[in-house]
Amino acid sequence: MHHLSFFNLFQLSTLLFSLALLAQLQPGDSLSSPKISVNRRDLLQTIGSVTAGGLLLGDTTTNPQASIAAAAEENLQGPIAVLGASGRTGALCVVACLERGIPVKALTRTGSWDLPTFASELKTDGLLSVSSCDVKDSSALQTSLQGCRAVIYAASASKNGGNPKAIDNDGVVAAGKACLEASVPRYVVLSSTATTRPKSLGYKFTNLLGGIMDEKRKGEEEVISLFGKSSSSSSSYTIVRPGGLEEPKENKVLGASTLEVSQGDVLAGIISRADLAEATVELALSKATNVKNTALEVYYTESAQPCEGRFKSQMKDGVRLHGDTYEELFRGIQPNVDYFTILPSRQIARESSSPAHLTPAWIAQLGRPYQYS
Image 1 (spheres, rainbow, N blue to C red):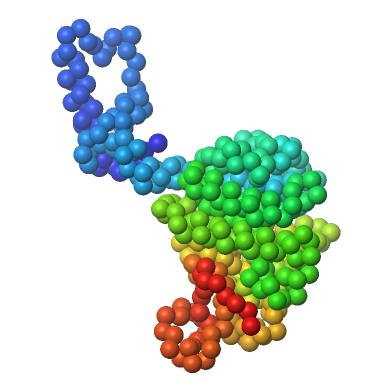
Image 2 (tube, rainbow, N blue to C red):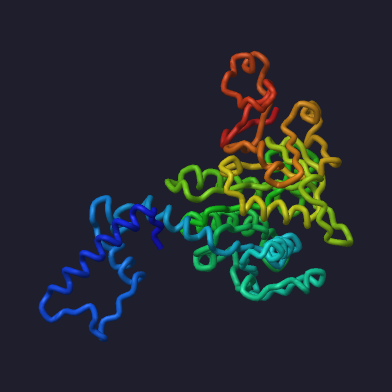
C-alpha cells in the first residue's frame, strides 16, 4: 500500500476525475454501466502501477529503495513475532505483547503454544496467532516473518530444539536475513552479557554448555555485519545482553525504574525473565533512532558489577543509564556500539573522536577485532 500526502491525493483525485471524463467520451463506454464497478481503492491501485514522473507513484520495482521503505512502513502495523515462544523468556515476551494489546505471533518449533497459567485471563482474540517455525528452516522464517513490525529472537539451544551452533548462531543469522528480506523494521536478539569477554568467568562457565558463548558471539558478529552491509535503512537490529536470569517464584514485573542499561559489555548483573521480556518488547516497539543497530546490557541496578576485574572503574565512570520509564531508560543509548576496550594512555591522548558521553579512557568499538592481552 502506498502512502500519499494530502497534496498528492488532491493531484491524483484531479487526474482521476479527468480520466473519468475522458473515458465517458469513448464510444460504447459508460462509467455508469452496471457491468462496471470501480471504487476509489481500485482506481488508486490501478494508477499506482502507472509511471508518470513525480506525480504518480509508478512501479516501485524500478525503485528498490522506495519499495523497501513502503514495505517497512506498512509492516509497522503488523504483529510482533517471537521466535522461541515456547521458552521461558519467549513466552513472557508474548505475554508482554498481549498485555499491551499488540498483535503477536508465537512461533515455536512444534507449532503449539499455550498461555502461561498466571496469564490465563489475558484477552487473546484477534491478537494472538500460533504457528510452527523452526529457526533452522530459512524458508519457514521467510514465510513467518512477512508483514511483521518486529521480530524478537528468544530461541536458544536445547536438547530437542538444536545445538548452540544451530540455534544461537546460524538461527540468529538466518532470522536476521529473513528480517532484511521482508523489510521488518526491528530485529531484537536476546543474547548474553560477556559475549565479547572470553577471559571472564561468566563466559568460561557458560561456554561449558556446548560452546554456547562462542556461538552467541559469532551470531552477534554476523548480524552486525549483515545489517551493516544492507542497503536498506528501513530495518535495524538491537542486541540485548541480559545479566544472569533470575527465576523468582512469581513473574512479577518490577519495571523500568529498577533497571540499568549499560553499553560496551563491561558491566553485568541479574534480571528476572519477566523484566527482561518487558524491556525487550519496549525495544522492539521503539522508533527512537538511538536504539537502532547497537548492543546494550540490561540488569537490575542494585546487582551491577564489572564483567572483569579490570572494569571496576566503570562502576563509577562508565555508561550507566536509568529512568522511571522505558523512554527515559533508553534515552542515553548510543547507536553503533558493540563493545568497549581500554586503549594505551598515549593513544588515548591522541584520540579525539570518542563519543562525548564516554570517559576519555574509552572508545566505542564496532566490528573491530580485539586481541585480549
